[in-house]
Length: 123
Image (cartoon, rainbow, N blue to C red):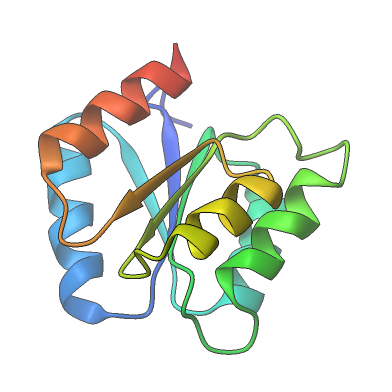
């Protein structure tokens, strides 16, 4: 077991997974990957990561559903969730907050912004 913070990345776009994974690993985070909402929810429950980066448009369960199921369950509600998504509409951002997301970052994003938000939420 490493003492690095564990981040679960729930994202179905291969390029995005690789880009984020490489950046996080370069910053000394352990990265777990899930390619759909259902697998992401399962991993979040079994592995209890320190933080979750969650896309909204996912196969099986969307990010809003995953976020809600985790945030409304007292066993997992303290895991910070960053929604990282191409959905930039005000209503999407509002819905993300309503579902309990701790942060909402839209794609394309600056890696520095994501890393700063991770640091802040893990502090």
